[in-house]
Length: 617
Image (cartoon, rainbow, N blue to C red; front, side):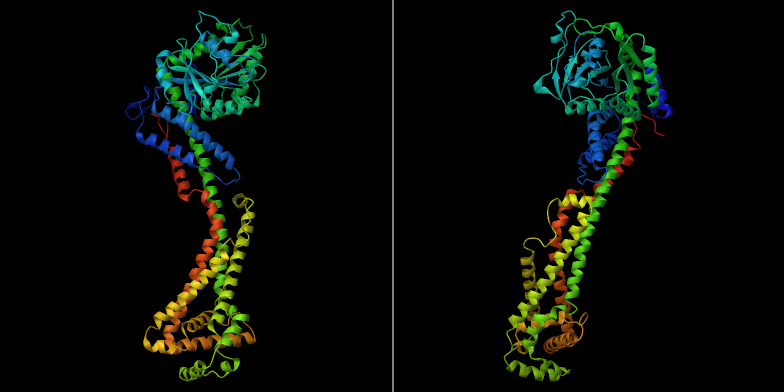
């Protein structure tokens, strides 16, 4: 139910009495002065934000929120912003109703001659016809209201020159469908225009949408129904919307058989009261024969015509009616925008949830790679065998002295021998590291896809695509990054060993050999190994570390090992981050969270915005 003040205003308008005028500070609102630019700016920003709310994820409630955004944008453009700018513009009364209710016949009767076509073939009104007083054509010739509809000038049929019924009225132009036909007619009272809308339950989807658009752009509704169809569901859905928005509605009950007028009218009044429209005027049009032009006799609609004339004749009544309808539209707008803002937030939350799924899966993959390159796992199998062949036999490990000085003496014997080529160790390390990275990336992809498939939003974004393994080119990129990391290590060693003393110590072993030793030091801790593997891996680490300490010194080895490990981490992180984009790039359809924040802020501000000059509680 509308608030007490709105109900009082409604009853005053419907009774033809000008309501009490409200003031906003020292500004009287009778003549509809323009509001401050800040209010218009707020409405335009709301329109832009709602238009941008695409809501791409098919979450529960998303379709309804998209429709709410679409209708809110349309009403802002078609009615709210234009009416807010010019409260003194003529009222627009839209004649709406169900198929065959007699809307066009009523409009023709109100002006006293055929203007719109009426007939048995449905849909009848394909092109909305707007009738206005000749002096007020400028209000409607531009796109002040309904800017999305074109304008076509029509001509009224002169009452002094009757034509056959088949030719009566304005003929729709097939090339101008979706346009307003503007007809200037002196029979229309100044201050008010009549718009004959398509059927609200038309068989044409386009007509139904257009009818809803026109009703949303109206200052008041002249709702036409019949004695045998007034209880239909579709009209009552729209009437409930009118009550919610506090729109002035007049009901025309058409084609009422003689003798049942009181009974049918009483039942309809009771239904209107239950929907919060008990104060709406109800006009009963009896079932009477039409003349040769399919016209009702003037007496049948005299009460409707008098009521419209009384509304149009009083500037205070028109201003108050426009202000009340606008205030109701603003309240409805705040509610619709709030629903869209909530849906926008849900979209962002769903996107954040999906992003977290992927980020977590790939972060865990990076951690597993880091563990595999720290716990000795990479020194199993072929890598360990080739390293052992490169530096010597198991006997070499067992006879290794722990002091650096003695180790240097043993190095001379080693350098004098012919160890296996270092390239074989590099290849084994590259192969093993490559397998670990690719395997963990594949597991992250499998986990990400599984979690997205379990989420309706994720399923929509994945569609029929299979992202459960590594993407094209990942294996090659991984091999390239491993080789680049190995190159980084050799460059580090060259830089660290630029001193001639260091260079001499590396001559026999070679930069590649020292780099391999550094890789072994990075990979070979004993965590996760058991039995004989511990001894072998431990010996591997000792050999590598003692060799490096003999060349660079203990502090430098620690620094080099950390830089090497950090460099590998960074390259693996970059690889996995790039690979995760296969999922995350699909979230680009979502707007940033800041857009949801903006819309929520606009909703709060819209809730405090009233019609021009309306006092706020």
